[in-house]
Length: 244
Length: 229
Length: 81
Ligand SMILES: Nc1ncnc2c1ncn2[C@@H]1O[C@H](COP(=O)(O)OP(=O)(O)OP(=O)(O)O)[C@@H](O)[C@H]1O
Ligand SMILES: [Mg+2]
Image (tube, helix red, strand yellow):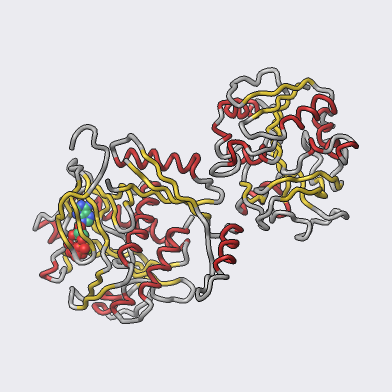
């Protein structure tokens, strides 16, 4: 990059995941996340395409990150770039998926035999080891420490942030008429060692129920073949962009 | 009292206001170009109607960045009188000197017509010569005069007695039919928190003598000269 | 750095212009148009080389001039180039 280069552009493809492609850019500290229409479920056993999903998830994630940044929650978000691209700060992803639950659903309902839809009296944090080959197995603080996935200090920070983000997201979704059931977060370290919220916050990784009708507004529509999938993502994008 | 009539590129009611202040009221009146930075010695600052900067982007949006506007804000902060009429009202909302916004008339038409207006408060420098409830007739001439504000702002305006004028019928009834542009609660003019900044869509300067078709504008302009009761 | 700014009317705000466009579109055959909202599209070129700095500057431009927060929302996109 010469001194006079004031542009940002993709250089090489770094990684193609199930839902996004990660590109390097001409800026060493910045990456571009490109959102695809591809959808997978049940650890990749079910595959499909949700029309326009990439653009909608970029709109939803960018809209949420942008607001979070304004209100003091640090994320990797730098800017939206066109329909499907998001400019982000490059981080080393901590290989832990942080799941936050407010209402019983999905694997929690199955594992503990609790009724789907039951309100949890306090948010529940769960950690999963980010490894597709192993099917992202559940782990706890001891595994994280024993295998050195993150330091105790980082984990204290991540848990605190997850709960703070949770309160923010509950209020945010509530203001657009949506119940935040559960969702997955990813964190990463910058070169300087700061831990930031990374990846995306979209209906791909959240369970979202319409407050009034109870209608499912997330990827469960794809998992369970409920139809009108794009419409649900579109409705979420509309609500996020129209939020105060 | 000494009047300043601010002129922006595209102001077109500046001469009407100059005439009204100088000849109808008999006050010392000066034009002040928007590039100037001094309002010392003036008691009343008038932001006249027109299409400042061609109404580019939004009516009043560009004008508020003119050098004189910082001075207008200082004048207002000192407690000096500021009256914005039509485009002047739009500039005051864009500048944040008055709350809310003025946007496209609900009927999409440019409306130029005499309006019946009900005086909502006599506690202001532009209505203190009038009684609350009095109906006056003053023309409007605008395309973007629909006053909008969020609920909290409307509540505060009402609660603080800061609504100056509402569009009404001949009997003083505030009705939807009497609302020419879809303004929230028929609002035609408002006051700032300090009550020394006023904005209104109707043009009092256009009705200051019989030959102009009416004198109700004088009721407003004379209020500025009269001391508070 | 190049950016696109899209300014839209807040959801609750009546859009007489959009309604006029909708009525005109309704005279075209074969399409049913339920609602039209007209917004603004603005291209900005900045000398700023740092994308975060550019975004900060663009947000300030939107808050101060490009959009009126009483009635409008805005969206900023940096342009790859
Ligand atoms: N700021 C960032 N810096 C570096 N990597 C990031 C950043 N944000 C997200 N990522 C990573 O980019 C990838 C995005 O791709 P995608 O979400 O499609 O992956 P995936 O198929 O879900 O696989 P994975 O199990 O790796 O998440 C993920 O691996 C995610 O962890
Ligand atoms: Mg992923």
